Image (cartoon, rainbow, N blue to C red):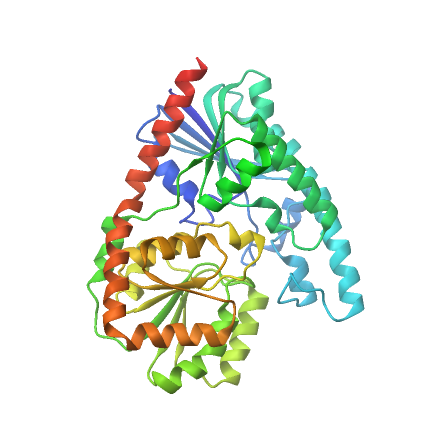
Length: 426
C-alpha cells in the first residue's frame, strides 16, 4: 500500500480534534502519500464575499506538505451551517416552533437543504478531476455522499479498496425533513453494502449496521493522546469544578446543566462550571440568558474554542467531566472523544443513559449515567463530589482504562485491518 485518499464532510483545516485528524496523523507515517478531500465549512467570521462565492460557485483549494495533500472542496450552494436556525432564532431544531410561520419557513429551508445535498457528489467529482486525477490504493470515506464518491472511483478503476469510516449515524443530522432524511438513510445503506471494509466507531453503531446489512463491522473507537492528557492528572488548587468540552449547541445538554447548578450549589456552595468549545450562536445566547437569570455569571466561565493541547490547563483544575447529550439518534450512536479525554485526565464522567457514552462509562466503572433531567444531573454531581471514596474509585478506573484508548494503539489496529483487507483484495 502506497497511496491513500481520505474523503470527509468535516472541515479538516477549520477544526483540529476530529477522528479524521488522528487517522491522518498516524497514516502519514505508514503511507507514501496521503490526500485528504474535505468540505469547507463557512463560519460567522468569514467575509460576506466568501459566503456569496461559496453559494454560487464550486471552489477548491489545495495545500501540500511533505507526503500530505489537502484539497478543500467548497460545493455548490454551500452556506453557513445552521443559518436557517439562526435566521429564525430557533434554539432547539428537534422541536417544531410554536409560531406557525416559523414552522413553514423551517420546512422550506430544510427542503432546500435536500438540493444542497444532491450537489455534494458532483462537486466532489468536479474537484477530483480538476485537481487530482490520480489512482489510489485505498479510499477511506466518511459520510454517505463521500461514500458514493468513493464507490464511483472504485467502479472507474481509480482505487482498489473502499473503506467506510462509520463515525456517525448520518441521518441523525437531519431532524426535521423526512424526505431528506430518507434519501440519506438509503444512500448510507447502499454505500455500506458496497464497502470492502466498514470501521465503526462504537458497539451500538456496529450493531445497527449488522442489523441493517448483515455485515459485522470492525470496531475502532475514538481515543486520546494519552501522553498529553495524563499530564492533567496532576491537579492545581481549585474550587470544585465541572467541565464541558466540545460543541456548544442544542444537543449538548448545557441548558440542563445550568438548571442543575442551582441545586448543586445548595450542597456544594463554591462549585463552578467551565465550558470550552466552538459554539452555535443562537444556542450560546440562550445559555447566556439562563446564566444571567440564575445569577451564575461568577460561577460559569466560557473559555472559548481552545487548541487541543490547551485543553490540559482547564482539565488540571477540574473534577468532573460532563457529557450530557440529548438522547437523539445523532448522539445515541456517537463515540464522544471528550469521554476518553476526561478519563485520561482522571475525571469521573457524567453522561446520558441510552447512549454509546453510557456503555463506555459503565464498562469501565468511571462515572454515572443519568436520564436527561436536570435533577438527576445535580444528584450525580453532588454524589461524586461529596463521596470521596467513590470519587477516587471512578478516577482511578478512568485513568487505567484510558491507557487502552491511546490513538497510537487504536490507529495502529486500524492500519492493520486496512492492510489485511487490501492484501486480500489483490
